Image (cartoon, rainbow, N blue to C red; front, side, top):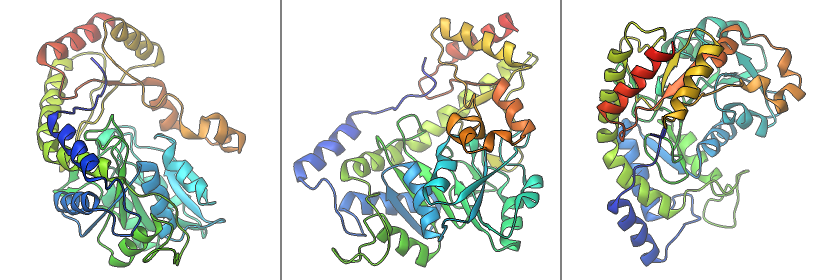
Length: 365
């Protein structure tokens, strides 16, 4: 019972074979190939946004967003440390400095109340992460960012299909970033996308993803090869059509597991009113690291892919510690890293599997 696994069928196979038969595997123009253009249009419609720009990974989406925002060496970008390392590394790749802030104890997302104290004259952007698929408190974060003239880039790489008061994840900032890595709620094999309603940003992003070219061999700005291949886009179009079904099954599983865990020694995920969780990861909080590690070991012994995301906060990883970030004290971040555990609720999980998970929790704790 894996924590997550790509769900692929004959439709994806036919889409990929169609691209191979066409011989058109990629297109270096800013507009992209036919499948890329179609995928972008369908994705923009799904999230109710004006523009979608497909790229080759979620990390590429984050880096391009920062480049398009004009982030440069000497600038500061505020990020959480309780996230996948790509959020901070995208900042480093632009030459800017990540400024790590703490998280809210219940949501595991960036705490808006500490954001204002991290802002300096060098702050040019803030990147809240929709961790585990639950949107960050973008209303408060956006209010603070906009009042200070700071670019808001939403790292929605884990939150495809989530929303706040009906507004889709990825559309809650100046730009939003998605990842379509195989373990996500939908996949293109590898891949990502940027979402924006800003025409100028969209135009810049499309040019930057293919070396800043306008028509070809006429690079007008710095860019790189960040474009999505046609095979990935073709697969993404099929997966996007299946996404509502995937999300319904995840939601059903998550609600059932929460019911089964009621009264146990673990704290199930909390979803604030008005928010919709895509249940990319169903993450419980254990009382301490010993309980968490014992529970994980027992589940793994029985073939249940319980996994810790993320055991080491970004600022405590060897690379960032070597840069001096290890001296930062982030109380809630470090507490969460020591006691969270993610449990499978993906569409392959059946009710009997959920009952087994709950029984192990009750037996171990």
